[in-house]
Image (cartoon, rainbow, N blue to C red; front, side, top):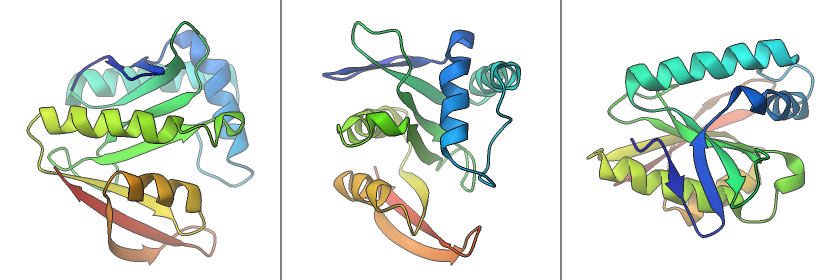
Length: 165
C-alpha cells in the first residue's frame, strides 16, 4: 500500500511521534469505557511506534490526515487486519470531533479504498457500531454494503460491511 496519499484537501501520511497529543485527544473523545491505548502522551508515542512497525511488517496500516499546508493531525484512516484478514482488510478511520461534518472522512476513506484496489485486493471490510450513523453514511457513499450484524460492546450491535474492489 502507498505510504503517502493525497486528495484535493488532504495529505495522508504516516503518523509522527509528534502526533501523540492529537492521538490522545482521539482516545479521550471515545469516552469512558471505550477501547483505547492509554490516555497519556508516552503511551500514545508507543502505540504510534507499534503501528509503524506493524505497517512495515504487513504493508498496511494507518495514515494521519492533515490539511494541505497544515502540520496538525485531524485523525487517521487506514487498513488493518482487525476482524478481517490481510487479503481482505478492514477500512477504519477516526477524526477529532471538531473535524466532523467537513467530508474529510469520506475523502480520506475514498483515497484509501483506491489505494487498496491498486494493491490487487478484491474486497474490503468495515465494522461500525449501529449507533454510528455518520460512519454508516460515509461507508454508504463509498459503496459498502451490509454483510451481517453481531453483538457489540456496551449493548450495541456491530455492523459488518463489505465493498468489492
